[in-house]
Amino acid sequence: MLLPTRPDLDEFIHRPAKIALLVDALGAEGIAATAVLAGSGLAPAALLDAATRVSLRQLLAVHANALRLAPEPGFALRTGLRTRITHFGLYGYALLASATARQAIDFALRYRALASPLIGLAFEHRHEAGEAVWVFDDPLGLGHDSALRRFVVELQLGTLLAVHRDLLGTTLQPRRVRLRDAAPAHAALLRELLGCPVAFGESADELCFDAAWLDHPLAFASPVNAELARRTCDQLLAEMEHAKHTREAARPEGVAARVAALLLASPGRFPDAATVAERLGLHERSLRRRLRAEGRSFQALRDEVRCTLARDYLRDTQLSTEDIAAALGFGDAANFRHAFKRWTGESPGAVRRRGA
Image 1: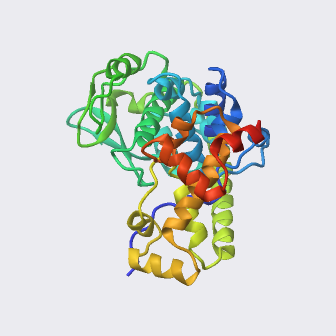
Image 2 (image 1 turned 90 degrees about the vertical axis):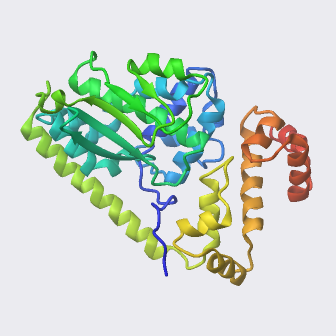
Image 3 (image 1 turned 120 degrees about the vertical axis):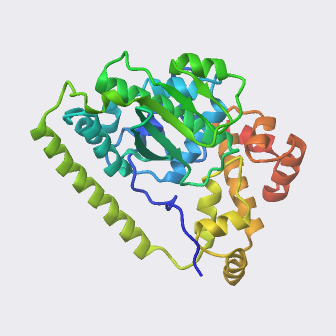
């Protein structure tokens, strides 16, 4: 029996706008683009090419780098708050051209795939409470105890608030925010930047506004332009579906490459065999059996992925051996150095010197 599957992490169907945003934000802090892109397989020049398409795996790898390289705890939220609706291209233009905020929300949900989502979003109009509520979900299975998920949630909170303000005015404030996580050290900063009460240890991640703005007319409403943008977005969705089906038709039957892609999508928090099997719609025993049939093993694939990422980090970043060890899930640098020597026959220092 097949288990429910999550979105395919290795479909090259997304525009790199979110990656470019992180590269620019960290670049302003003096961090090189190559460090932000390490392990993603992307070169800085690719972000300037309109034809570039990236996968969710690459998006996650860059977000994981940004989490590690972030200069201060509030970086994700601050970066989200600097997002402009124009970063989303035609998708953002269609939101601007909507007649009301409610129509913009309907459009945003219908065409959300065009925004390269790492977080699931649902919208609720809670009439009795007079609240308009965005509810966050975790479709990629990052896990509620994951630092990467917390980073992505804070980035999404800032982005949502920034987009709402582009539509409805800069004075718009949320009513409240609810978060699953325990209060972090920068809890006070989150409350200050969001401008509302923030409750931690809740049963859901939610961003709540006053429902009164739902039927507020938008300043740039244009029915004709909204319809033109909608038609173009329909075409973009059709292109994404075509690319998806083409990839599925060309994808080999073997599972080793798909397992490697899933592991690459979670640097620093590699899922175990049971979790990977679930994401592929298999039972764990079936996954291990199919890997054996291909002459592979789950442990060997995980080591290959760690080795690939380690080489990228040593060649493309200035991260210390201790930081790289932590990023790859090792308890200490000595264990990482021993493993790297076993994988490659070289020390991390030798690879870094040769790269330099």
